[in-house]
Image 1: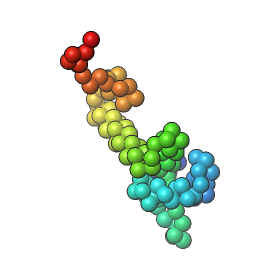
Image 2: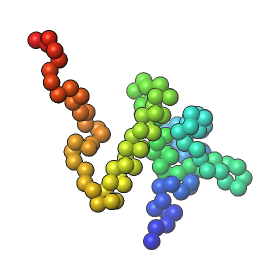
Image 3: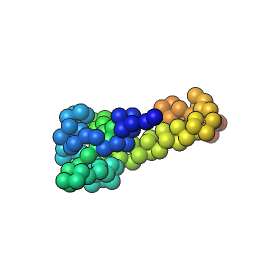
Length: 119
């Protein structure tokens, strides 16, 4: 039986606690909301509440920003990474398998033949 403790999407963390947990400011979390990456739930009093999943996304964006990637690009990358991870989970839930070639962390070769006129 699943509980809210197991639910990565349960909005359990206040803005201040969420910011402390991942080492960012509340303004940074608000900026991710404005960018459309995460939309926190609201308590009855109107306060933002974040889930573990949202905090993982926010933390990943922070990592990308630290590497020099712009906010809009970082949000897009994180969105695509999250969708790929969800697709992989769904494949496994449906009884499929993933191969090492399905690992998004490993670049694939885009050209199968050498470049023309390359010596």
